[in-house]
Image 1 (tube, rainbow, N blue to C red):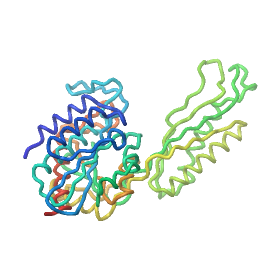
Image 2 (cartoon, rainbow, N blue to C red; image 1 turned 135 degrees about the vertical axis):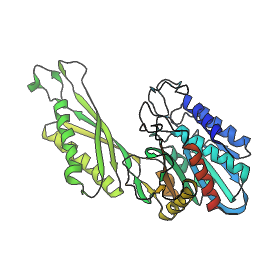
Image 3 (tube, one colour; image 1 turned 180 degrees about the horizontal axis):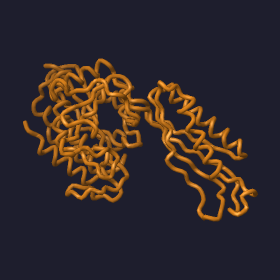
Image 4 (cartoon, rainbow, N blue to C red; image 1 turned 30 degrees about the vertical axis):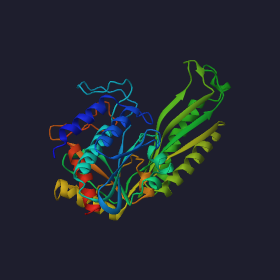
Length: 383
């Protein structure tokens, strides 16, 4: 059954019409309509725009969940191809269009063949890009309503060659938190700085001081990142502002280091500001936990990948990355694994990094991902 042309058409249509987190109305309607047309039971409303498809195969008690994310990023696409985004300020720069089309392909195949015993749940999730749609689905009773013995997902990887995949046990992605620091000083005329308390100067010291946390306070064997990406203050060149605002992201591969770094940020920022006579108010926004693959399920996922890609094409020892992923919430609730599917073709197709304005999902990767989902269902739920 060659589903590649259909999957490609679905993917490019979704790419042309990207939708941001919790607003994936068109995309979720497409998903629901296609699932229903294949005889798959459709449930809507979890996390707002989430869609769950329930497919029962031959008689059996086993259950498995496959997840795909549907949302786009708030970015302006620069590509000029025909299927580029038609929505200003939104684009599928992380390949969720490909993930959705890939899982749809697996759903159609499994609905037609039903070469498994038990139940497959297709979990189409909104708002992975910072909205925590996976967390919301779990909190709203995803696994109570749709029991899953195990749960699996994939993500495209432009750093891996097409036809390969990474399937690694343990921690594979970092916790992803956000940070906002408000420096409160005293404004005034820029020509009379001695009568003010300059929040820009204080903020600059805070920025430098925070960089010492990872360098000098965290065990070098551990991994953490503090990236301060925004610094806003003032509105006129000859006015010292009253306040300055610093924002950024914090990453860690373990809960212990995550909590340690959060506490040190509060301590270092407030004490540095106080040393200059100012006040620092720290708002630490806890985000996604580390993504941790379960050992047994990772091995099962790897064996299914080898069935599809061939021996020697599945990497089992790649180091973790510092990106975050809200599939982590599903892996906290159920055993499973998250794999990275290579999409870089020799001609350069699929090699642009994610979250880049020139990114595009490689359509040749989708049939491989769909075959993996299908093979995993057949392996895990044998007739």
